Amino acid sequence: MPLWRRLTTDAERRIWISTEHLDVVTILGGMRSLLRDRAQAGVDVRLLLFKGHGLQSISRRKTIKTFNGPLRGPSLMIFDDVMLVPHDFSAVAVAPVIRLHRRRDDGMFEAFVHAFNDSWIGTGNPVR
Image (cartoon, rainbow, N blue to C red; front, side, top):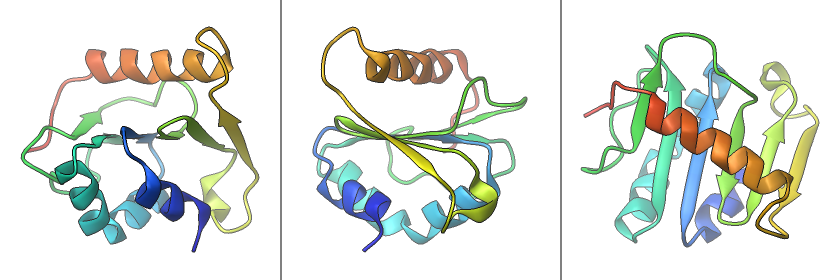
């Protein structure tokens, strides 16, 4: 089982993903039922995707938002206290990925979480 799928299955608090890469949206589309199940289990699922991504909302909660311009910052995949920061989605299967673990409140992990949250709050267009 791929790491990102295992992390999605195991997440208990949050699954936050931001990307402008179509490859990731395709993968997320294949995981729609898993993401819906996680949201229904109380996991905070947030997908910040480029406009025109083609996915429908995963649950009744507003879990997908779109943005019009380029993503400010790297693509992120946050699963509870583990984060994947992919280098290049054009070769998803072989691309290098930075894996960060939350160790303290003021570290690099939290900086990325705050950047995601700022983008989430500042972005309109929730998908219904």
